[in-house]
Amino acid sequence: MKKESESHNFYVRLLLTIASGLSFLIYVFVYRIFRYRYEVVIGNLSKSFPDSSREQIEHYAQEYYRHMGDLVVESLLFVLVNDATRRKFANYTNAGLLERFYQGGRNIVTLASHCGNWEYMIDIPRVLNVKSYTAYTPLSNQWIDSYILKLRSSFGVTLFAKKYFFRNALSVLKNRNEPCIVVVIADQRPAGGSAKQTVQFLDQSTRVQTGAERLALASGAAVLFLECIKKSRFHYDYTFHVVTEDAEHCQAMEITEAYYRILEENILKSPAHWLWSHKRWKPLPEPEAEPSFSC
Image (cartoon, rainbow, N blue to C red; front, side):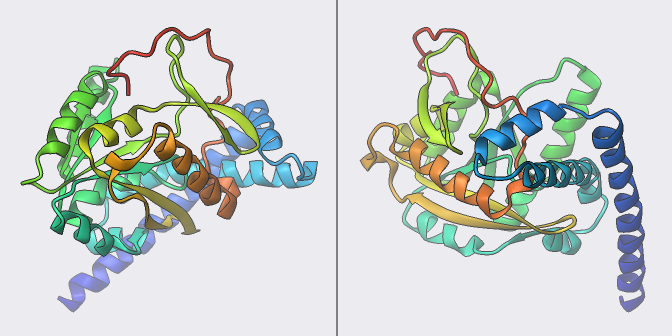
C-alpha cells in the first residue's frame, strides 16, 4: 500500500510538472502571440474596475491569461488522478451544509458561475453523495459531443439537454423522496430575442437570465450559491452560501439579484479568475416576450 501511495505521488508530481509546462505554453500563445480576445478582456476589466489604473488592469489581464492556460490543462488533469488527489484539487469547505436541507425534505438549486474552475464541479455527486443534475448544450461534432457526455456522466452527473432542462429539472426537484442537487451556471449572457431583466453588476447595467430563479420558485427548492476561489495553481476552494432556504417565499428577481451580489463579491476576492474573455455585455437585439420555459 505504501509503495502504491508513493508511486501515485510521483505520478501526480510528474503530471503537475507537465501540466505547468503546457499551461505556460498556452499562456504564451493566447496572450503573447495571438492576443486572444485581448480587447474584450481589457474592455471588460476596465469597465468593471473603473478606479483601477491601466497598469492594474493589464496585470489582471495577464493573470487571467495565465489562469486560462491552467483551465485548459486542469480539465484533463482532473480525470487522470485518483479520488484522493481530486479532493485536494477541489476542496469543498462546507459540504455538510446541504444535509440539513435534505433532512427537511427540501431539494437544492445551486447557482454556480465562471469563477475559478467550473469543470471541477463534475465531481459533485461523489463529494456530496447525492444525485446531481445540470444543463448540457449538445455540440455539432458528434464525436466530441459523445466524449464529453461520457466523461461527465462517468462522474455521476446526469445531463439534461438545454432544450428540455427546465421541465426535467423541475420534475426531479419536486420529488422530495429522492434528495438531489441541480447545478446551474447562471452568469452567462442571455440569448438575443427574448425579454430579460437587468441588474447592476460590476459597475454596469447587466441583462441577466432568470431561468434558474423561476426553476427555484416553481419547485420551492432551497437556493445556494457555490463560491469558487483559486487557492494555488490547480487547487480551488468551493464554499456554499445560502441564498434562500425556501424559494417559495421569494419575490420576483430577489434570487437573481442576490446571486449577482454574491457573485460580485466572489470576483472581487479573486479578480483575475472570472471569464473575462466572454462578451458578457455585448448589446442584445430588441427583446420579444420571454418563452415560459427558457432557461
